Image 1 (cartoon, rainbow, N blue to C red):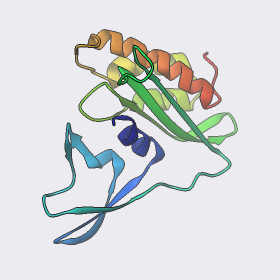
Image 2 (image 1 turned 180 degrees about the vertical axis):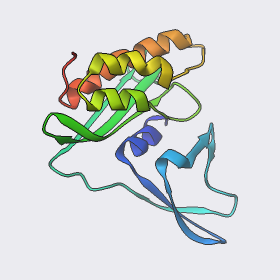
Image 3 (image 1 turned 90 degrees about the vertical axis):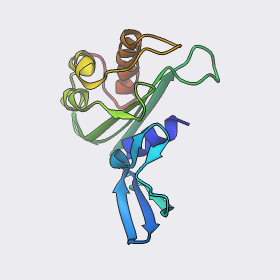
Image 4 (image 1 turned 60 degrees about the horizontal axis):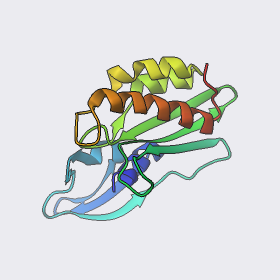
Length: 161
């Protein structure tokens, strides 16, 4: 479901593909093109998904919001970073449920890497543009994205500022 593509993006995975032109690797960020559309062509075969090996400094976080346990998530967040003292390097925040594909929240990544959780939350309106759907309005989803960012920040070792 939607969680796996977001996790692959957060973890910095690469997808290996073999096709008529040979073998190629595509970053997970670039693999998911639209709803039910990927970087695969009709004659390609996905042969492997490579996820970087975690180190002792690797920090991961995951949270999602659903109306009931087991329901599809209204909004979710997968995150990965490398802890370096008080800084989070190579921070990747991948939201799902906010568009046709997972969305990186790059401005929030920069703020959170510097330790400013609330600045990260305030940038989400710039990073995300979730559509209204049967579960919630785009504004509600953006609000929930902020709630999830605060939760995941704690998982990564960041307290709300």
